[in-house]
Image 1 (cartoon, rainbow, N blue to C red):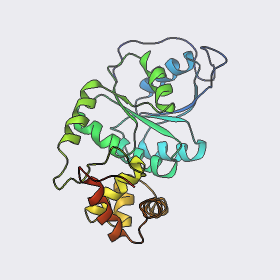
Image 2: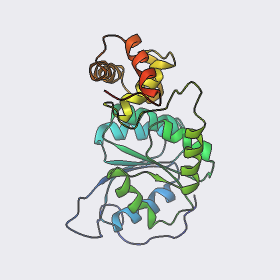
Image 3: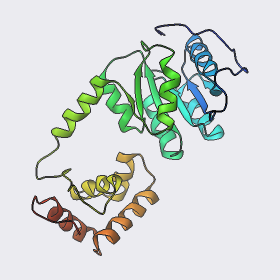
Image 4: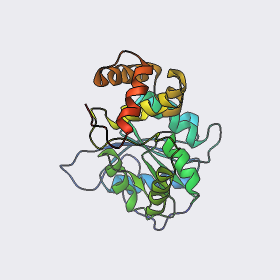
Length: 240
């Protein structure tokens, strides 16, 4: 456990910080009780509600499913179940809950694993405790809580996408980014169950997205959708 600065203030059960703002509900998952207490104090001092603390990944999943928090702060290395798997399960069953991974490691590859599992943030425990409430509010508001270095790595990975224009998308398109993501996977031969696993979605959600893709592209089958995607990726092809 390491944090740049200890924040003193309210203890469990008390809430401080500004009034008149939406009081977000946060779950802390960390096997270090001191780390949980330090983060709890920082969040409560900033006016956020800490609904509980989990000492392992499995407990984090159970508590998240029970309390349905706005944000989960998730450690990576924990007993019983690691934070990456716990993140995947929480994001799969609670799409409205945001997960921000907090870890001692500065391994960006680990950060990518967390993001692939569904997390919207990956922060080192070397970060100032004062920054954690801001990251929680940002995650809830739809902002990514990641370092500039990890952002650059994501950009580099996007530039290195596979050949044959898979992943290339037209500037103007009737499809949403998520629908293009699913269409890309269809183009590379993934089935419904494989897409659900890869994107941490339910099978029914994937099927719903595929129906929307077919409707928006004006086609009747996945094969026709793939063919239409190839047309749309062509540099000179206008979007319908």
